[in-house]
Structures are given as C-alpha cells and as structure tokens.
Length: 60
Image 1 (cartoon, helix red, strand yellow):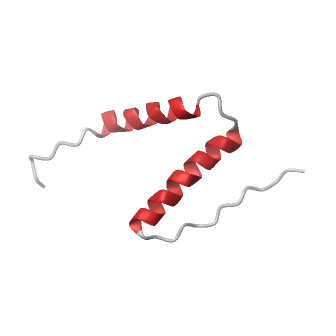
Image 2: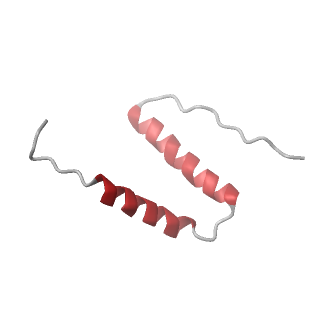
C-alpha cells in the first residue's frame, strides 16, 4: 500500500451526507427516492454496469 495516500473517509462521508441533507431537506419521500435512484443510475453508467430495474409497490 502506498503510504503517501491519505483518504479521510469519515470526513468525506460526512461532507456527502451533509450536502445531501441540504438538497433533500423538506422534500417528500418520493423526491428523495428519485434523487438516490438518479445518483445510482449515474454511477452505474459511469462504471459500465447494468442498472437494476427498481419498482416501488403501489399501495391501494
């Protein structure tokens, strides 16, 4: 392992979490779900994977 690389994972995780909180604060659940699904879709596209089809069960 290269000792010159120092990744501050805890700080990075908190920064991402806090940014997402700011973006999603006050949003309804369906918008929050859409936000994370869009993020996941972009990640799958970036890494060249196949995005699984996610469907939400409708309660009637």
